[in-house]
Image (cartoon, rainbow, N blue to C red; front, side, top):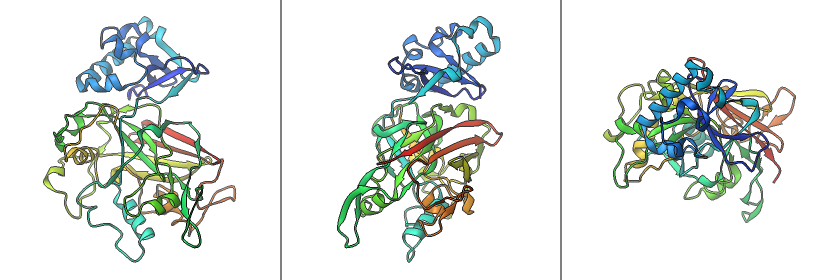
Amino acid sequence: MSDLQPLGAFRPAGASTEAPRLGVLCGEAVLDLAAAPALRGVLPDAVLAAPVLNPLLALGPSAWSALREAVARALAEGGGAVEPALLPRAGIEPVLPFEVADYVDFFASRVHAETCGRILRPDGDGLTPNWDWMPVGYHGRAGTVVVSGTPVRRPCGQVPGPDGTPRLGPSAALDYEAELGLVVGTPSAPGEPVPVDRAHEHLFGLVVLNDWSARDIQAWESAPLGPHLGKSFATSISPWVVPFAALKDARAPAPAPQRGPLPHLREDGPGALDVDVVTTLNGQQIARARAAELSWTPAQLVAHLTSNGASLRSGDLLGTGTISGAAPEARGCLLERTWAGRDPLTLLDGSVRTWLQDGDEVVISACAAAGEDLGEVRGRVLPA
């Protein structure tokens, strides 16, 4: 992964009281940015020694490029330029790489949107009328974004009982959603929309994301406003942020729209990410889908989010929404895979799942078209 230069924050393993440090993942080693002699003076010391990536994110593309070039030179030179700062990956513990400013989760997959529509509205249209014209999304909770490996406790919430009266209790329909997360670097000014052709000036990198979902709580609360407690209990992300600058060859054309979009959301060129996303449940692969099949691209998500004048902040996290394909083995959540429990999934050990059970471990990984490993996000379900 050294060519990708994923960035993150870490502590020495077992040193929970130590302040995090910033590093670049280099295969089975991590380069401590503040301790590398070759990096002194490339960026302000306070940026390299920060406990989170946010100060670096705010500096913008020229600073990101300068750091990438300096790291590449130092790794190529080797020796005293980097050796004092190279730590074995096995000896460090990744932590949340950036302070999440805001979290917005989109609904960018047409297949996912149509499938969910058929499940939830069997007598209506699969898509709502607005879907072809704008990237539908909801505003999530930044404070419950957690780093990969953090256990996720089964949430409690309101669900209707047999007589329609709600009760408070543990979710019986806990689900995952396999997504990618876009990390915003450069902020934008309030009241000034970001044009679609300049959106990538604001996007720093990519993480793998699991948008945990309590479907029974979500269904009850989503009439009429949409997801709230059914989503806000946890969102997990991979610990290393892959810079978009390393993904120039991992681009593909997005599917041609059936209608729309409006001019301010039209994008020229291959704006989709040619990335495969794989989900395993308790070690068994249960889904594989292509992010290139998402109908809305990263640039369009940014342009839509800011089209009303809302500003971007360094550390904003934008989820793509569930990445799904038409085949059953490409469906990116159990809601789709089991058709909301109608068609249970039988695992190789003979156990059956309609929804996640306590003790289940979900791992979502991503790789680029050329085979580069883009990381993984894992989480195990704890009882309520």
